[in-house]
Structure formats: structure tokens, C-alpha cells
Amino acid sequence: MQRLAVTLALLAVVTLSRPAVAQVPPPVKRAPRVRVVDGPRVEIATGHLVVLRWTTNNPGGSDVHYGVVHYGTDRAHLGRTAKSPIRLNHEHPYTTFRVRLDDLAPRTTYYYWVDCEESSGESDGVKGAVHEFTTPRAGERNAAYVRRMAPR
Image (cartoon, rainbow, N blue to C red; front, side, top):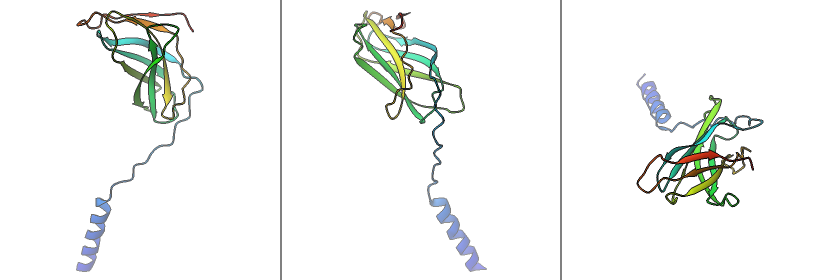
């Protein structure tokens, strides 16, 4: 009887001391068409940074996605890119992306368009319209002006 108790105790220690293996759910079926349903809009703005926010229908696919902003001061050359990762919640029909743009100049108009992509770098196909915002003066906050431009 004592031997059985020792065996069970050892089994419990070995079982409980091993880290649990995480179950990674399979990727969710990709949405046939990912589209922006809200935004993009400036969430916060200072003279040197802006946080842009937009919401899409849930793109599906891999768990990790990136919000991507292509931007610049010349509408015809949006060569700068900012990305922020997000983990999808497959139980929600929508996903909100937030991307921070740093090292901006005060009182400057920037043009941008948003996209989202899987962790593999494959675009979800959002490719929104070109928008613009103007950063506030140095020391000011949330005074950015945002306007939607004509589609590209």
C-alpha cells in the first residue's frame, strides 16, 4: 500500500511539473473580401507622432496580423511604412488596427493609405483610399486635421 502511495505521488509530481503543451488553433478561413468598415482616423496627434486607427471585418487566416500604413508628404510618393502587430480574436466579426507613426514634422501635411497583412507579409487586400492629416504645432496635441482624398 505504501509503495502504491509513493508511486502515485511520483506520478503526480512528474505530471504536474511538466509544462503544458499549448494548443495552437488552426488558421481561420480567410474572409473573401477584407474591407475597412470604420476609419481610418487619427486617434492621437502631437507635433511628432500620430496614431491612426481603423476597423475591418475580421480577415481570418493566421492569428498574427499587422496594421500597415504607407505614408509621406507627397501624395504621389508614399514611401514610408509603419506597422503594428495584432493578434486576431476569431470570435469577433471585426478587428481594430492601431499604427503609430513616429518622427513626424510639426505643422506638416502627410498623405497615407492603410492596409493589413498576415504575419507572412501577404496583404489582406484592403488597400484603402488615400487620406491626409496635418500634424499640430510642436507642443500641441490632438489638433490634427484629417480629410479623405479621392480613391487612388
